[in-house]
Amino acid sequence: MSDISEVVVKYLKSDMTLEEQHKLSLWLDQHHKNHEILRNIENYWKYYGGDNVSAKKEVEDRIFERLQLKEPPKTRTVLLNPWLKVAAMLVVALAAIFSIYKLSFTDTPEAVQTVLLEKVALPGQKITTVLPDGTKVKLNSGSKLIVPEKFDSDKREIKLTGEAFFDVTRDPSRPFIIHTEKLDVEVLGTSFNVRAFSAFESLVAVKTGRVKVKSQGNESVELVPDQMVSMMEDGHISEVMAVNDQVFGWVDKELIFRNNQISEVIHTIENWYGVTIDINKNNLSDKPYTARFVDPALPEVMTSLSELYEFKYLIDDGKVIIR
Image (cartoon, rainbow, N blue to C red; front, side, top):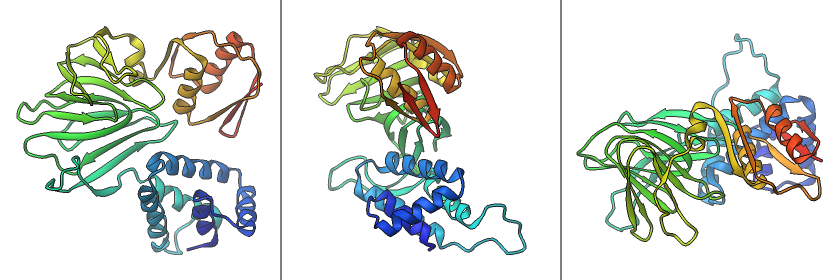
């Protein structure tokens, strides 16, 4: 493995010597694209495993494994300089969306272990995937889906962290079950939205068909089209509510805010565009924000915010500075 590859891995693990810090700094200065490459690697490292040590070890192993592959024949034209080529290999290794694990959906000793695949949408990305049964899933930014390589004969179970819109293939003999941190969703065939970000309240909203929502305390409710529920702080399911356009907006590239606090708006923008927002302004107003954008560029959203909250901003290399 090249020196810079080892340095990047140590950087991800926060285990660098002064000499390695210097090497990384030199590499970043060699090309402006290197900053973007490193940021993408950091995002994947963060959202792939969170604080899960074993998951991060899996990512590290894949970096080493991928960098041991043979290089292209010398007769081929390579436009990247050596430093960029190594970095590109790192990105390929980290951004390989499917990762294989031997896991089980249940904790019971007798449970049969199943090979699972993981699908990740990094901040700033929205991806669409098709599951083994033909179910279509649109995964929102900063979300993660764990799916078996092959569904069981009597049920279809997956795990979701984040937000996704499902168009489930109908199969009455095999219920489709989504597990999240706070609730489970069971359907036969329908389309609906599930949000399970730790920073927001969990919710389930139905577009077509019928959905059963179950809390960790075994409280359950059935939903029909244009109905939704959320998970309250006390662990109970809320009363059934009418679906608003904000819930499904992201599926059609619509960024919608409806009386959201500035903290919620900032978090949503960071996730939507894959940027970091630093607030260097005291006494930023806490007035609620309502707006609707269709496939907006970042400056469009930030300009709207700046006019309401009376601040200036600067967008620089993946970072937004509010002042």
